[in-house]
Amino acid sequence: MSSISFEELATIIFILVDDWYQIEGVKHLQGKVGRKPVFSDSEVITLLLLMDYLPFPGENQCLGLIRANYLALFPKLVDQSQFNRRVRNLRFLVEEMRRSYLGQLGYLQQTTYLLDTKPVPVVGYKRSKRHSEFADCANWPDSASSSAPTM
Image (cartoon, rainbow, N blue to C red):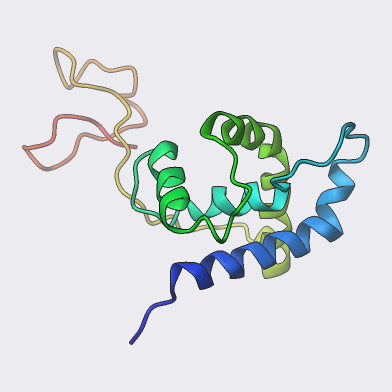
């Protein structure tokens, strides 16, 4: 079984993002003044979503990989500071896009969800396992090797 290439993944995500942006996204940005940026909002959102697929801990590393290996896909790529500022400005638009796709898939009508994830540490070990701010809602793991409660 072969996996999809990064270029194909980036293209598919860009098409999905840009199609939604042209139909729905512009409605949420009415009244936005100034000239259009050279690096489009669709490209910023595409890179933001692609970062979830890249095995790097930070934004700098992801943008560095794109700049070093895939600059042909994003020829007008902005620097990290501008990218971060644009992402912050578009965060509400990304949430609207997520909700739109969830609605199309029928997930907004669900009342019960199953979440499969790693245990999330919520508080560090204090003096005693019995004295915690989270005693009523967090459990101590069964494993003796872990000392942090999880939700």
